[in-house]
Image (cartoon, rainbow over all chains, first blue to last red; front, top):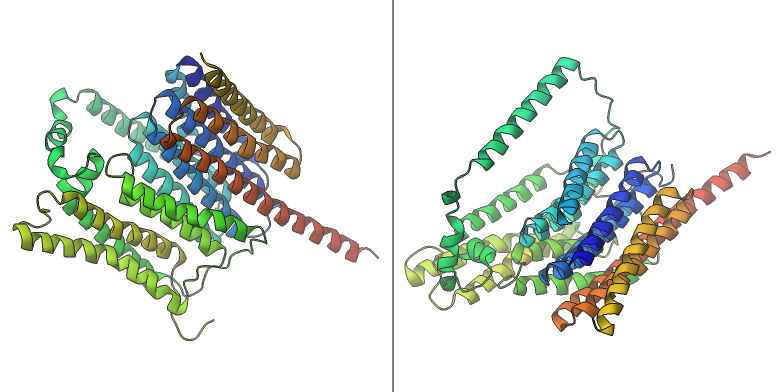
Length: 86
Length: 302
Length: 105
């Protein structure tokens, strides 16, 4: 359905729009936040894709992505070297 | 409209890959690599391979990120490289040449070269499961999967032999972390078991379940709840080795029962596959965690 | 189109709007703490609305359970990561303030 496909494109665009902050973000904290947001937006994109293509397997996939994005975010904070704000 | 989606996705994959290679700050490069993994996982979904997408997200984003971060702590900041123009031109020509040859090879591929799908479809009734990926991995080509697990175990043994004895020094994660763990850890175990069972009919399976389990174990490790120094590491090691042992044992038992190595007895394929996959899930989870955390040897501590 | 489907599509559009606005905020806000605000709105409201919309449109139990768990997990992990970053950043800020005060004559 065209509305669902448009929404999927929009959420993908939101994920891409977080990347400038990830590449530029002067502090490591900015990069962690951008990574977390990117993972969240991709989870939303997967849910909408699952709806658009009538593939409920993608809901499980979104859950797996959410799990691993959480772990990645925590890993960045736990394994940081030095300060977050410098 | 999905063409727009695919074009955006492809451009973003190229952009994040470029940034991961050229970012001046190492944290930015690792973050770019993780994001690259996420977008490549999304591209697998668009290509109709959700099993690969699951494995890519779980291993490429979660575990590899933690490994790269830990490795980067001991490294000096990246030095600015001085690449001369002829060197750069040669690299561009070589890369473009290889990409062109690959594209040409894919485009001229004859239709009759796709022999695998009809073979799998014809034989899937005998395999005991209805997910073709699981059928191929755990039944038709179980020998390859067994060797892959041996490779994983060999990698773990190498890392154990080379890893310095220093344990990872992690930042304290504060008082809000244990409540998060109380939600995350049981959820990851439940999700891992669900993916294991689901793998017989839908995208899922042992590798994905093991990687999700590793994600939960990593979260526990970061909180300090799960320690891998001293005698606490022995159950993890036992789990890591158990996968190969169970798989080899099952193969030998199958040979005793039916005369051919890894040929499961008729009618009981699903039970055999699920037993092997359960052992594989636990083993892969433990192996990936030990690959990250390393081990401390007992005795004198620095 | 039934009322439930209409509500579902409205939720999906609202969730996508939250995500886009949060991406804009992440780029344009000038301070770390303000960007954290934007991030957590996307994690909680954005994905929860999208999951709610998907659950309304696809009403089977086999779909609602993963969707609900995804919304919970993203909200909880987003909140935890946001808190971790904020407390670490706040600790560094207060450390700098103390150093400045101690350095003053």
